[in-house]
Length: 273
Image (cartoon, rainbow, N blue to C red; front, top):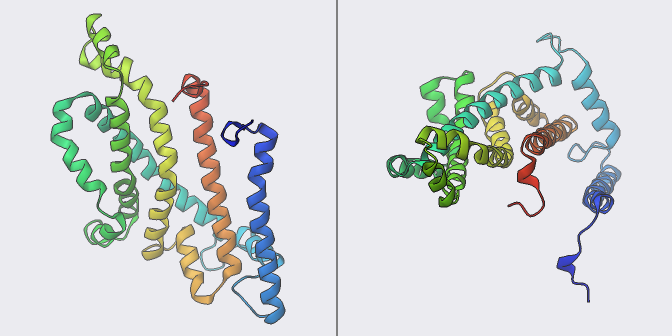
């Protein structure tokens, strides 16, 4: 008897199964929108697809006479610049701290409790503090992303590094490897694919922190635009922006997955953890 747990869909089946929830969600929106429009043609909560398309096209092509820029382009560039800087700082910090905490018990004993304590602090709760200390400029927004995702990435990577089999470390030391060589030639190659996995998992929270910071204090950005037009109940603008953010997040996630498969194929081999 073939058990359900042993059924592994092929590439075509995975695409088909993955498309089913998306199609059902789209159909559900169309039905709900048509129902609300039939009851109230002026309804703004669930605008029809033509209204979404028109508003999205307007934001993506027409120049704002006040700023002199195309809103969607300007917002996307500003948000991606902040997100990229925050992710870059977080990734570099995670790599250094993760290797130190994972390899050196002395460092783990000294900094481990501090990292654990910072990790349980809700990042949104410190946003007012960041704005007071760092001002309302770009620094506070980037800092929120860094504070929000770095502790979790550090804890995950350090646990992965510390889980490297002791036999490998002993063999490296037997061959005369120093601590520096063990870090660079033993731990670093094994840590890199784990770092990319942690970065992929942190993309969602990073977007949340970015949008929250932009909503409170910003004059350009995807989060700023969404919270700006919400006062007018402009769902025909909000929904295309949400869809655009989702698309950007998916592209970033798949790009990181491709980098991991391209440069660390051994980590994706069949049976690899």
